[in-house]
Structures are given as structure tokens and as C-alpha cells.
Image (cartoon, rainbow, N blue to C red; front, side, top):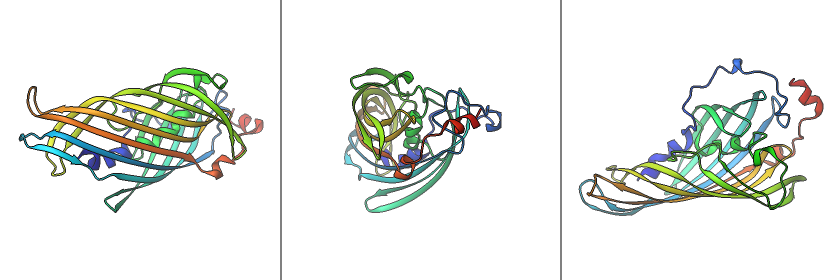
Length: 287
């Protein structure tokens, strides 16, 4: 089934197809992005699980009723700020992932170079570490949450997530609500819930490797986020995705439905949590 073949796509899927510009061409100044600094490191851990079922018929008219073995993933990502300007952040990333299916583990390593704009949108990306690894980057811009406005419990707004996951044809549009505020390791964070939908298109194949066409439809996305407003970073994130996608071999012929369930937990390491925000002197050194 496609979930097995999709593990590589899960790691390397990029959110933008444009070639990465020469990092040396990016300005070195940064006034608007004072919450981050050149040389700053953020380490994240990642856990996830994926499950899938197919009900329908294959290209030969044979009935399909199968459930893929659940896939669990465990990974780590290091995000390093290389260059900052008022319009972009140039970020170097490295990470590792272990995917486990039916008791068999497969380690994967990757690196990437990414440009993020102040809204948190990933404008350019290249390398072999994409997909879910891009999620923390979508909240690094000073306007990534509520267009940069101060946050108050009860606030709500709509906006697009800065990246997309494997199979998404567009970045999800979500409705965000600030539901609480608390302290995590001495850092004040806002708890924010978000939900919405996005269009999906994914290739489908049976366990025997028989292609049954592309499945299309909509996915429901929900997120719970602990967000450090002062330092413009996600502290933790719980993202869930579910869909029921339909496929047809040809109009009026064999087809069926594919159901996906995915959950990802992303958390900032304690060592990164305790790193102090850049001082005024640090911010001045970038100017």
C-alpha cells in the first residue's frame, strides 16, 4: 500500500519547488527578526504514527480489503539559523528518522537548506529532510501567529500553515484559537488549537505492488500547539490528520476508498527551551 512507499516521501517531501538561492546573496542585516540570531540552534524531537486502509477493487477488478501495518516514527531535527534579514531567514537543518513497520526498523538521515519568510511560509527548500520535519519552521517568523499581534486567551483568526505534508496539493487553511497560557520550564507559552481542511492527491498501490490509481479528496487537519510568543518558536505540537480519499481506475469502472490516519508529536528539547533569548547586544550584532 502507498503508506509503505510513502516513508521516503515523508522524509524528503519539499514544500516549495523553487531552487534555493545562493545563501551568500541573502542580506546579513536583521531588524525585524530580533527574536532569532545567527548561530542560534533549536533541537526538536519527533514522534508519529501512520495507519491506512483500502476498500475497493484493483485494476483487474479484484476486491481489495486490506489494512496496512501501522508505521511508527521517531526522529530528531537540528535547526540552525545561518543568515537573517527583514524578509527571510536562511536555515540549515539536519535530522534522523527511524521508521518501524511490523517490528522492522529503517533508519534514515537527511540534511536540508530552507528559506522562511516572516509569515512562516517556506519559500524555498532543498535537501533530503522535508515533510513533517518542516513543521517547526512554519512558526519561526515574527508574523507566523496572528500576523504578529499580541496574543490574548480567546483570540481567533484564520491563516494558512506555512508548509504542507505528503499528498497535500495546497497548504492547509486553518482556524486558530488561543485557548490558554501557562509556564513550561519557566517559559511563558500560549496554548493554541487549530483545525481546517486541505485537498489531497496520492498514488495508491496494493501490498502486491499493483497500482490502482490516484486517490483524491479532502483531509481534516487538527493541531494543538504550545507557542513561545516572545521567542517566536513552537515548544510542542500535536498534529492529527485524517482523510477518506476516493480513487477510480477509469470513469465508471473499478475504484474504491483509501482512509488515512496520521498523528505527529513535535517537541523542543529542554536544552533549547532554556537557551536565553538574544539580548539587545546580540540583536545589535546582526545589524
